[in-house]
Image (cartoon, rainbow, N blue to C red):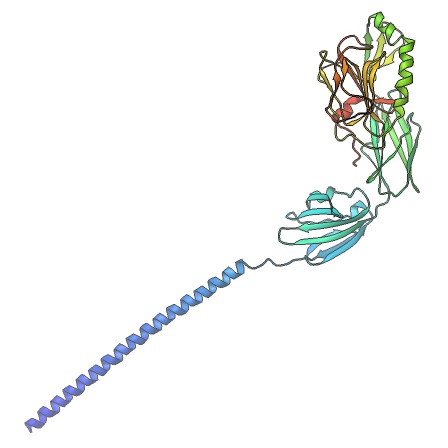
Length: 416
C-alpha cells in the first residue's frame, strides 16, 4: 500500500514537471513570436516611411506642369501652348501683343534680327519700326511660347513736337508706307526733303531765325496718303552785340568785294548738297572747350554800322593751336583757306545737315575726306574776320543755320 502511494507521488511529480516544461516552452515560444512580430512591424513601418520619402522626393523633382499663356493681341485672347504656334495680324499699334506676366521675358524677331528684348512690362512701349512679320517669344525660364504677328499699319507721321523755337530743326519721319517717294509743302521759307531709310522716310525741317512767329501749314504726301499738319513757330530772344574790329581786318574781309565773291563762288553752292545717307549717330560733340564769347543768332553791329548782321553759330575762345574735333561723322565738303573766314572746314553729315568751322590756324583734313566724330580736323587760330584766337562753330540744314546747342545737347532722332 505504501509502495503504491510512493509510485503515485513520483508519477504526479513527473507529470507536474512535464507540464511545467511544456508551459515554459509555450511561454518561450510566445516570447519568440512576439519579438518576431515586433521586429516585423518595425520593418514594415520603416519600409512604409521610406516609400513615403520616395514619393515626396519624386514629387519635388518632377517636371513643372505645362500651363497655357494668356496673350491679348489684335483684339483677341490667345491661350498659347509651348508646343504650338499662333498667328494674328495687327493693323494698329494698340493691337500689338500684351501679356500680364511680370516673371516673363520677351524677345521679338524680324526674321533672324532681334528687334526687342526685355520684360513683359517693357514690351508695352515697343512698336515695330516697319510693317512685316514678327515672331514674339515669351519665356518664364521653363517654357517658351510663340506668337507670329503680321503688322499692317497704315502710314503714319512721327515727330517729337509740333512747336519749334526760331533757329531749331524739327525731325520728321513717315513710317509704314510703301510709297515710292514722299514730298512736302509748307509756307515756311524751307521746303523739307525726305530721304528713304530702312523703316520709312525722314527729313529735317529747319526754322529760319527771321521767321515770323505763328502757325504754318505743312502738308506731306506719301503715296495716296496725305497728312495735313500745323507747325507752330515760337519766338526767341536774340541778344545784341556791338563789336569793334580793326578797320584793316574789316577792309580785308567782310567789306572786301573779292572776299565776298570768293565765298559766294566756292561756299554758297555747297549749302545745297545733301547726301542721302545719314553718317552721324547720337548727339554731336562740342568741337573745342572754351569761353563762349558770342552766341548763336546774336544781332551784331560792327564798328557802329547801322546795318546789323546775324551770327550764324557760336564763338568759342581758346588758345592758338588747341585741337579742334569733328562734331560728328561726315564727309568733308571743303577744307581750305578763305579770305573771309580764314582756314575753314565744312562737313556734310547727311540729309543736308552740316557743321562749320572757321578761323583755324591750320587744317588736318582734306576735301572729300570722310571723318569720324572726335577726329582732329585742325587747330584753333585767328585767321580771316577775327579779333583773337577762337573757333567759330555753326550748324545748318542746307542754307538755314540752326542752333548748334540742340545738336550737342539732344541730337536729332526719328522716334515718336
